[in-house]
Amino acid sequence: MTDGGALDTNRPSKARIYDYFLGGKDNYPSDRAAAAQVEKVFPNIRRAARENRDFMVKATKFIAGERGIRRFLDLGTGIPTAPNLHQVVREIQPDSRILYVDNDPVVLAHSRALGELDDTAEGLVGFVDIDLADVDRLIESDEFRNLLDEPVGVSCFGILHFFPDPVPYTIVDKIMAAVPAGSYLSITHATPDLNPALAEVGEVYRNNKMDAFPRTYAEISHFFRDLDLIDPGVVVSRLWPTSAGSPAEEVGHAKTAAEIDAEVAFFCGVARKP
Image 1 (cartoon, helix red, strand yellow):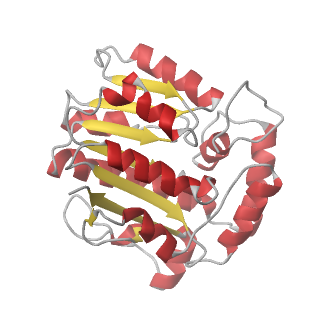
Image 2 (spheres, helix red, strand yellow):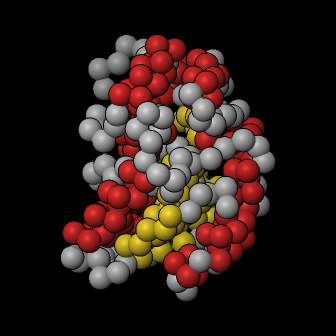
């Protein structure tokens, strides 16, 4: 589950740990202590966090730019880190509507402040305080219903692996059933397939009273069933096309593809609802 309720700085938060890995300052000693435990078993976690953020930008540009989507639902938003999803979207589609969903108190505080300062948004950037495990509440909310006049880009970047089965599949299935045909689903998800250390990372989070469940390629691919996968399918992020239309190149790397993928250890994909 996501971290909700009153702010407790003595207990680590997934959002604040991720902020730390991205070089942010909105984290506390408890978060940094848990992050150090993660880094001990998976030293490349900072690179993985940056790659996850980079894929968000690539996938969002594709959905907004090449596919013309103007409605976006971002699940498990996290602490705002430039570029934020709405900034990427609105560079391409200025009249887009974006709804952020999270229930971490630090995320909500920053998100509300961000919305108040965005004078050009004109109410088109919204935030809802909902635990994603309570997906029915999200679907029944006015904020969600206001997105459904057009196809929606649904984003699940680095969030589904924080729920035990069958919760993440229920979240995805119910949301994708509710959005119009022509909507898109984007996912990044940690996996032990590329690096066995991810299983230990999951243990670190669980030992700190946070759910974390890295999944296999087959389990991650299952999120996209009944949807039309966009080429190149469920892959490592380096194989997702750049804005130039070709896979990203590793510059100055003497490592094998397997070694590079082990440093990132997540699969990603984008699919369209027929």
